Image (cartoon, rainbow, N blue to C red):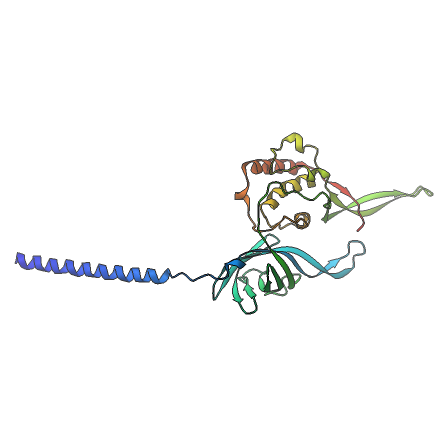
Length: 302
């Protein structure tokens, strides 16, 4: 009886061992199947293409209040991350909005059709053609009623993003924040009649030349450096740090200052983890002063 039991146990052990080997073999086969690497092609086209993203939008004249249509240009970056025989993967970055896309590449015409996910009202389709190191074409919104300009053109050049703490605004850059005019009540006295009247005038914030001199990526700032600066000065000095790291600005004010430089390339909507220790300290100090700083306004003709 003991011999029979021993035999049954031995047979059961062999059976279990055989099942485990078969399961292991099946698992290895499945893993091997799942780990098939799809070959990538045209890696020479990988990279960041940046430039103008323009379309017609309705604009209200700040002087007469009339509405007219004008071409509005923004800076966009299109990043190609991966190309295979069947798919293209990458992302677009504009106005602080970073969106993934997937599409196809036509080798014959050297053209891309790239679709953003479609779950955001600003998503759309890129139809762009490659010519050496440039991409040209159009973008069309999926939801044509959700955006001001549902059809835009693109003219992009391939550029390598490089962080450089020495990057500064050009000294011929505009010092005026044209995006946030503010109304002021002023008084006018007629010299002949002596009668005083009040009227409303629109003024814009103005920065000082300190924005061309103070570099918050290189020098450790002190309260003495900041105490006499205007609010707009400190905002630009702070955001120059983020611009050097390729931050894509949501606020039009900052886009208008940095998009006119040759070095600014928007590559991300969050660069906080890229800041150096001195940059983090300076940004914290600037934020403290910005909270209580005042702006200087002036009136300009355009």
